[in-house]
Structure formats: C-alpha cells, structure tokens
Image 1 (cartoon, rainbow, N blue to C red):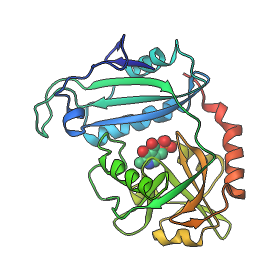
Image 2 (tube, protein in one colour):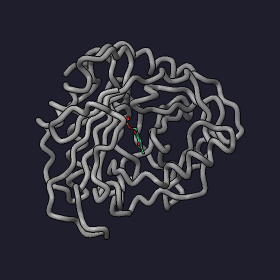
Image 3 (cartoon, rainbow, N blue to C red):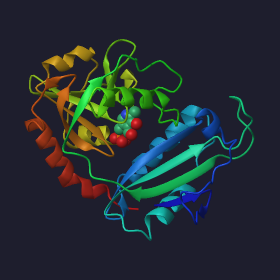
Image 4 (tube, protein in one colour):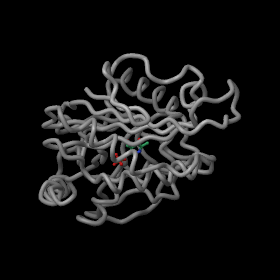
Length: 273
Ligand SMILES: Cc1ncc(COP(=O)(O)O)c(C=O)c1O
C-alpha cells in the first residue's frame, strides 16, 4: 500500500497522517472516489475525477486541485506491483472547529493505492428497511458520510447476503451500499434513474453507453418479476445476483453474461494515467 497526503508520500502508509480536527474525520465533511487499477493503470480516471469535482461542489467544498490529485494517483500507483488494485481519493473540508461549521484551512487531499482481491463472480442481496433520501442535501454525492451504508451492509451480512439494497422515500428501487442495480424484466435491461437518489456510478454510465438499458424508476417490488439482476460498481464490475431476499435467480443470466462480455471487451479503452 502507498499513501499520499497534500503533496507528500507517507513513509509509513498506515501511520497517523490526518489532524484529529480534520472536518472529514470529525463530521464526515468530505468526498471520495474509489478507482480500479489493472496492471498498474487506473480505470476511467477522468470520469472519477469529474465526479469528485461534482461531489465537492455539491458539498460546497472549494474547487478540487485535480492536478494535485493526479500527482497523488501517479505517486501511489507507481512503484508498487498492482495487477489488481484500488485507488482511494479523499478530499475533506480540512482542519476546522469541532462543530458542523467549516474552518478556513485548505482542504485535505489524501490518495491511497492498495492491492484488491478480484470480486466473486456472483453475489447475494438483502433489501434493508431504511430509505435512501432522494431529496436530501447529499443525495447523489459521494461523501465520506457513509455510516448509513455501514449499518445497512452489516444488516445484509447478518442476513447472509453480501450487499444491501435500498429503496428511496417513494419506495422505488434505488441502489446498493456501494453499487448500482440492473435488472431484466420482459427481456429488457433496466436500472433506476439518477432522480431515484442513486449515485451516478461510473460503471452504471459505461454499461448504459456500451451495452444499453432503460433508465426507469419502479417500486422495489419490481425485482420479483426480474429474470436476472446484476450489480455494477468499480469493485464488482458486472456481478450477477444469485439470491435476492431469499429468492434464487439464475446468475449470471444471459443478459448479465452478455453485458459482462461487452465490459471486458471495452474496458481496456479507459485504462491509463
Ligand atoms: C452508493 C454507491 N452507489 C453506487 C456505486 C457504484 O459507483 P461506481 O460504479 O462509480 O463505482 C458506489 C461506488 O462505490 C456507491 O458508493
């Protein structure tokens, strides 16, 4: 693992580095990105940086110095063997008073690169009772305030699943704790719209561009009519769902296999620093 903070590579990447009064640490005032690395090359880096900038703007953080972030990515990825890895970029409000108000320090920028295990070919899902708030101030932003996801994922694991999926306040299918959902009904591939409150997943967008699919908001119960379901994310790529709340599904089903084949064929186009 290599870690970089505000321009410097850490000699001990697991040692202390962020001030205890950093607003990201004290109140979750920060944004982040997770980027896949294949053979030492980040995947879809510019798309992730664009989303980082959008998340920062949504949170009211100053414009992120993306050139500094690119330097951090290069410094952490280079010099280590990463056949498969993950880069994690975190930008916070920086040192601040101990309440919700921001201080006047510049943001903290952290980049970490570490090896990653390949995702399992299929996964299992549990839906959770807490709604995603599609009308909330942070809807659709990739913020470091992920405690709801932590609770939901723990509940899914308690129920023997590996991902938790939320409905939104309207009861519509929304997203997982770290993934977007695609499902097939009547032979048609569908996924919730961004108005559902889901994150604008980089993987989701590329599947829609490269493979197709219809964006539509439907009640969570629509999945009962699905012939197959898959999750999409940076760490999972296209991952078939073999069980959804106790219902067994063919995984990966024919559409999932086809989408994954398209993904594997096109993926090299977006690898690079
Ligand atoms: C809440 C949430 N939804 C969806 C995704 C999938 O997004 P991406 O494909 O950009 O990884 C993530 C990714 O980490 C996420 O945290």
